[in-house]
Length: 222
Image 1 (cartoon, rainbow, N blue to C red):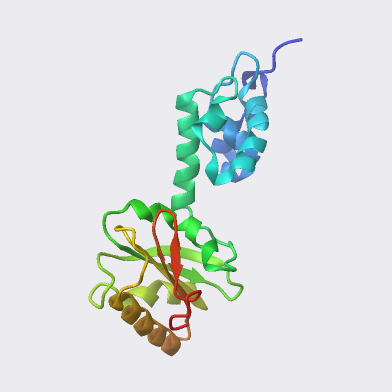
Image 2: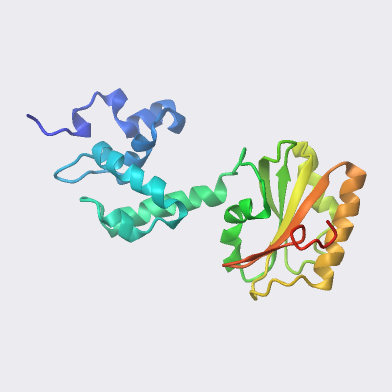
């Protein structure tokens, strides 16, 4: 019996050609992964290898590591690095539209990659009436104070999004999570501005690499 090989498939069924012709949305999960894998091993073609890897990737989620991937025959450090880089890049850059926010902790995974920034990044997540994320944007970079975080800049995009609410957030590069007087003042000012525009400020989250502080959970002004 001939060894299964992607090259033996009709051109229109090959993952890479299928993606080019019909777009990434036309591919199954294992076909998308096969594109990243490129060439399979002596024992398995890329599609078969991808099907074996998907359950592990699903189980590990954000905790997926190089070691998890290199356990598979045909996956070395280079391919493992490519897969991890692709998934992390997508997580950071593609807006998490439709993800429902039940608690502040639900937003944190989608903004955690800002913890390594040397300056404070003030973020605003637009939320619809079903508490689903519409988009997450960087409003300003620098200290969270009156001069850097103006209501005009914060609410400009949520108004275009027709958001019913927003969640504010910023990283603390130094690691401390206790809100400063400026953090509290800025939050109160944005709450007042939001009421005028009919957009509710649901929470303000301060986060570092391991923890987060929620104004809502700490009952500060909410």
